[in-house]
Image (cartoon, rainbow, N blue to C red; front, top):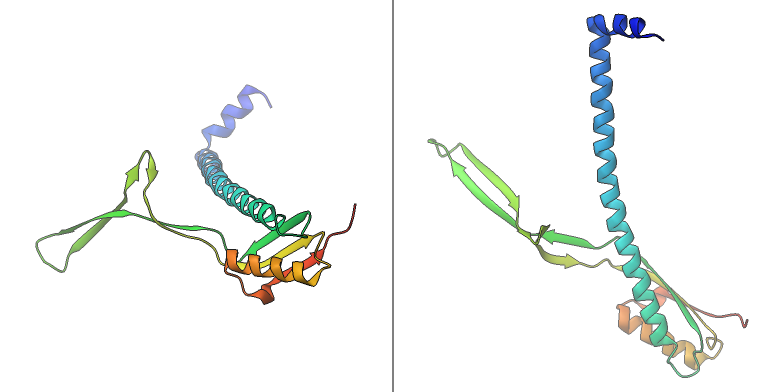
Amino acid sequence: MNKEEIIKIFKNKNNRLICLILIIGVVLMVAAGGHDRKKEAVSTANEIAVEDEEKRLADILSQIDGAGEVSVMITYYSSTEKDIAYETKTASRGDKSETSEDKKAVMTDGEPMVVKEVYPQVKGVIVTAQGAGNTAVKAAISEAVSASLDVPVHRICIFKKEEE
C-alpha cells in the first residue's frame, strides 16, 4: 500500500470509526494484560509460601528417629485471602433517602492495609520417608503432620521412599 491509498482509506468516516474502535480495543487488551500479571505475582508468592512450608515440615519430620530422608507435598482448597481495611464516608443530600457512600482502601507504605489474613484449609498431605516401612515411624510422622497442620489422619498419606 502506498501513502495515497492509506489517506484515501482514512478520508471515509466509517473507516476512521472502525480504526478508532480497533485502537481502543488494543488499549483495553493491553490494560487487561497488566492486571493478569498482578494475579500471577500473587499466585507465585502463594506457591513460594507453600514450598517453604513443605520444606520446613520435611526438615522437621526428617528429625524423627528412624524417618531418614523425607519429602512432603501439601494441597489446599484455595489460596490465602486478605481482608483490607476501608475508610467509608457517608454523605446525605437534603432528603435523607438520598445518601451516597464512598469506600476507599486505607493505604500504608503504598499498599492496602491488611486487617486479617485467612489462610487456606489443607486438603491433604503426602509424605514419603525412607523409614516409613516401620509402623512406629509411620505413626510418629502421621501424628506430627496432623498436629502441625491440623489435618485429620485420614487426609495424610505416608509412603516408604525408595532407596537410591
